Amino acid sequence: MTQVMAETDLHRGETKAQHHPIRLYLVVWGWLFVLSTCSYLVDYFGLSGYLRWSLILLFMILKAGLIVAIFMHMAWERLALIYAILVPPMLILVFVGIMIFESNYTLLTRLLFFASGS
Amino acid sequence: MVDMTPTHIDAEIVRPAGLRGIVADWSSDQRAFKNVSWGKAMMWIFLLSDTFIFSCFLLSYMTVRMSTVVPWPNPSEVFALTIGAEKIPLILIAIMTFVLISSSGTMAMAVNFGYRRDRWKTAALMLATAALGATFVGMQAFEWTKLIGEGVRPWGNPWGAPQFGSSFFMITGFHGTHVTIGVIFLILMARKVLRGDFDQARRGFFTSRKGRYEIVEITGLYWHFVDLVWVFIFALFYLW
Image (cartoon, rainbow over all chains, first blue to last red; front, side, top):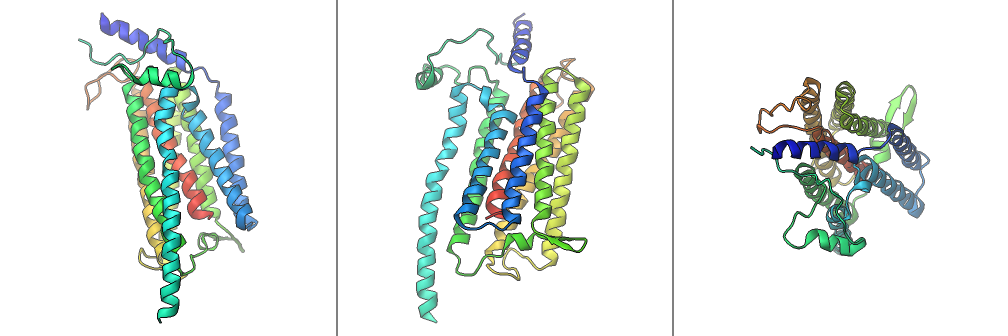
């Protein structure tokens, strides 16, 4: 009895959660194609410096956002799940900062000792 | 006998908005993820742990690339292909990106048809996703063969910093393994969908539990994650 009730609940839950038209996925798919083409063109035209960096990172973040929000349905989840999954990876940015500092230091010592030592 | 934990609560849960709602969801000895089944929550948590693994690879790659005094090989030239008479930079990687994005598109539609209980379309789209994934792995195998033929090794290469090879094989190898596992996972689940396991509430061979169409969405989460990781690898390894 409990099981039957649980299952009807499940089925209702499923139909309630999914009402997106296929069109939405096709539009997102199209955008992902456009954004990928843009980031490829950055390399094709050989842009360099800060322009290249900002464009690459911009297209990367837009693509990642579209995939997570629409394809992975994160946009329709409860805030409790969204925060539990998306906040921890933000801490990686701190790690990135630490490693940039560390690699600059390593590069400095290498330049100092390899250049003058031999 | 209740053989599965009821995971969907139909009644609307009234919570304050914003941060107060999160605190209310997480506190007082209750289930934190209210309307998310354990399967989906566990897949998300697994993907979070996988995020950290790939982040560590990309971070160590960033560190060796920033700290080396030897020039880094130019990926634009290393991954160029000569088609006809013209040398096109990075073309194979661009095609691989489009193949993987297309597979994500078919997967998203498979999830949608799964919830509409359209057995044939779901299975067909899942198999299309698997085929695109297998194409991706094939192109990666081609790329590896080409680079190994040109003398790239984890400890050196003809063009510059030796760390290029180790980063390349580690990162793309790990990603390729994920794609391969995803293809196997997709084929197994497509077979279950096609056989009508989720319509007849057939018990699984491995777990003896009744499956639900939600497994299509969980498989999809994994697959989209593989695509997501490629977005970062494409930007940070190939385009840097």
